[in-house]
Length: 259
Image 1 (cartoon, helix red, strand yellow):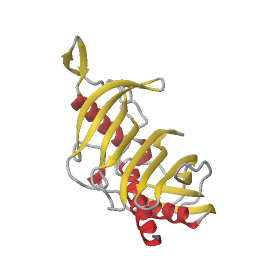
Image 2 (cartoon, helix red, strand yellow):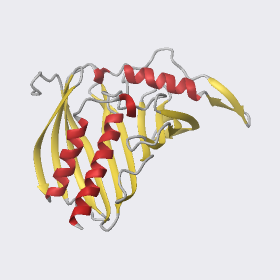
Image 3 (cartoon, rainbow, N blue to C red):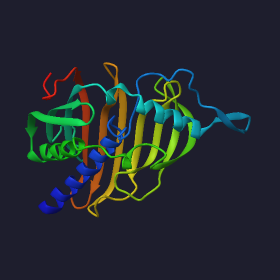
Image 4 (cartoon, rainbow, N blue to C red):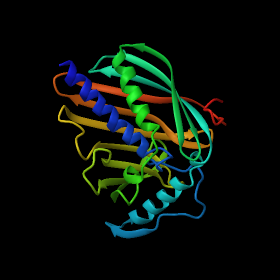
C-alpha cells in the first residue's frame, strides 16, 4: 500500500509540474503569457449563428501566442514565494504545508529553495518533485499553442467581471503533459487567464482521475501563474488535492538567485 501511495503521488506531481511548465513564461509555458496589451490586435468575426457573430478562433489563438511571446516575465529576473498545501479527501486542514522561493534569471535559469515545512513528509516530497521538474529547461512540446493543440471556440464568458473567450483545447498527441480541457483568454489583452483540464494520457494506472486548474494574474507587471490546483483520485487511498498559491514577488534577482 505504501509503495502504491508513493508512486501515485509522484506521478501526480510529475503531471502537475508539466502543466505548470506548460503555462509558465519559459515554455511560453509552458504556456502562458503577456502582460502588455497588443495595440490594435483584435479577434475577427468569422461566422454568424442564429444572428450572433462568432469570433474567429484562429485569430484569437494567433493573438494569444503573440501575447505569450511578449510577456515581460520571459526577459526579467524575479523571485516568487509560493505556498503549497496538501489535503487528503475532504479534510479541512492540510496534511502538510510547504513554502518555497522560486527564482528566475533570463534566459532560462530557474532555482528554488524550500523555506518552511510542516505536517507529514509526503507533501514536502511532492513539492520537491514538482519544483525539480519546474526548474528544468522548458520544452515547447507542452506549450499552449497550435503546435500542440487544436482549438475550438466555445463561447464568450465573463470570468468574474472580465470578458473572455473560452476555447476548447484538443491535444494533437496522446501525451501525459498535454491537457484536454478549456482555456479562458482575455478579450482585450489576449492573456491566458485560466486553464482547466485533464491529462490526455493517464500518468499511471494508480491514478483514476486527475483534474488540473491553473489561474494567472499580474505580479508587479509580470504575467505569471498565481494559483494552481491538482486533484487526483488514487486507487486504494482515495482523493488527494495539492494547492499552490503565489504569495509574493521580488525583483530584480541577482545571478545567484538572491534578491
